[in-house]
Length: 417
Length: 160
Image (cartoon, rainbow over all chains, first blue to last red; front, side, top):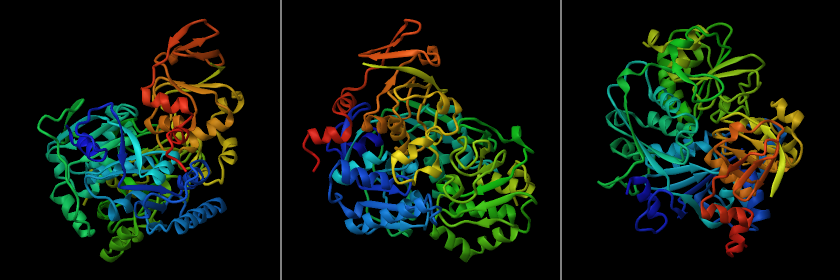
């Protein structure tokens, strides 16, 4: 079996699993956020008629999409989540302290687990060797009540990445290129396993960026084999007990793709689909109105650090606004203590409250008619961040920071210090 | 059997387009429903209760928001026929009892033509052409037959 099949087998008490089989799996955690939890609460109570969640320690509620509450409806929905948490005795409820996936990876998940969340980017936890996937509010309500959910064992795609990372090219550029190559539905119902020396060379932050975006090709799971870096990350977050699974020698993958990172250029995804991906130079000089660095894709300390290295001693171009939102308060505090935040603020950037921010269009940074945004987020769908007549381009933190200096799309290799 | 007028969409219709981020915190699906596809003039002006949505590849991609299939159901979409569906949207639609039908030839279907879905056939009543519908895996079909995951669990005695 491959590692995906082995983890699913262990969670469904099956000896042997193969793609296509439908299994009932036990869940190690179930996450919902403020865009999806209230609907799940209604379904849990009114349709299922349930009274108690299966295990309060494993039901995690996170307010991040509309924080600080951005409307009366959002404030009311937050109160509904708080009331539910109190009534069910849930110990883990996060309120405006970070993006759900960042918080789950900082505080909850460990390798070898199976986790679902009512958010499509739940696949991010594959960076830590967790089988995690997004589902809707009904499945989450069922999972709250049963502690289990059905899953189809997916086919695997093994992406083997080798070569030396060129200057100015990051995991974000690689995953944009992969989504462009696979297309937006090209990996539907598949598990994508990232392997090879170029993946092992990445730190945890960039591994999270890779795993975060597999859903943009339709994939169900991402998976990166845990290693010494994973162990060190988890230990620093005080999590040491877990099981690490590996491919058997005869593991089968439906497809194996090879990628040499040495030839990759900085990439851009252009409106209005994430699989519209080209080399950056094709958009060089395109004028921008807003820039955003953050989200579960690229709001980590390492991302802020890259931006600060570009912006140090320089100023954001006149006439553009640059919003930077740390992915969690942990990231924020670390960046305050190390002085990164001073560098960013001195350059003219605005700092947002940890959360989904201008990735989602639920709080600040909303775009007006005919405005153009360059973002480190994961989606560029029409109207996602405001006006349906605005445009969203996606890129790495280095590209976004370099472009903030000029006010137009700029190759980060020209300004990296 | 389902009959209805076709409203045709392109490939990769994402759930943000079906129901925007700023609307998801509204207190109920019925309050969100008037904003379904709010920036698609085609849907806004032409859709009537009982119509069938026709998509290309990867219908319902993007966000896991179950509000997307829920508002379509609330507005009276009779079924969605597409070449393929995004995984989470497909699951959500099955869970809600909204018929989602996979047919490899949707590019041949024209706007406003009358469609009939019966058994394993999709019939274009305008042209008289019949198309095969891809069968669902038996387990998924049993969820559809039971009327969604909750009714399925209830039948198995697994709910309160």
